[in-house]
Image (cartoon, rainbow, N blue to C red; front, side, top):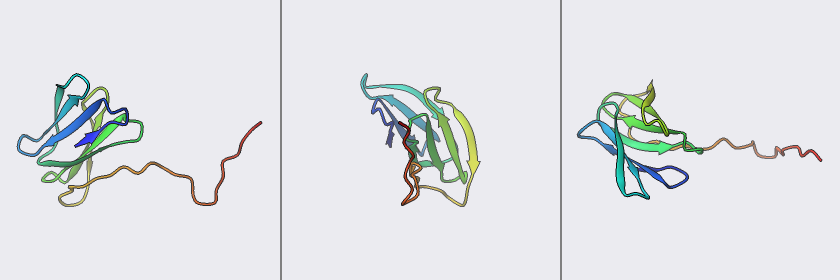
Length: 102
């Protein structure tokens, strides 16, 4: 399960039905269900909450779901049986400082 950064939407993978249930956390209801690849497992969102990434174990793919549209925007072929996924925001390299303008 993954929760968007604003904590209003949760995404739950359903291995048996090959889809992702999208929940409205505040209203405590199902918003929609998105069909993805076979046997979805790990799911995460990007830092802005505009995309969700779902590992499809038996399809050897990752589905990219647009948020708030809740549709598959892209399917990315990956290695055998992906199951876990994490999103790490881009960071400045160590020792590099941002310039400030006055």
